[in-house]
Length: 70
Image (cartoon, rainbow, N blue to C red; front, side, top):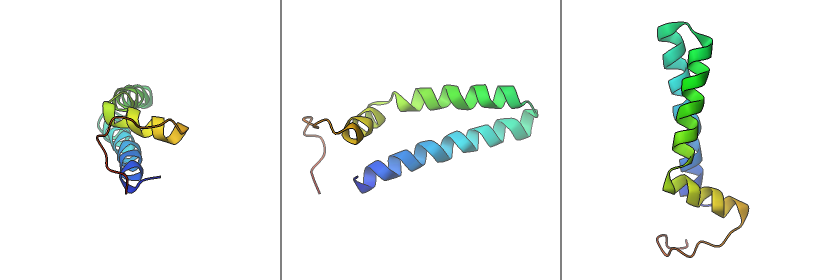
């Protein structure tokens, strides 16, 4: 796994947890916090960067030429 892939995954996890905490602390509504965190997680996982990370984790070849192999 590339270091930038690990950072992208950590970013996703940390921001989803931060959003959950922020919503829960401001509204005290567990259901709303879970719903917004899951919606944000679904949105961020469909971004082009994360799609490339997920493809590499599955073992698919990255033919985009966008990243130089380290």
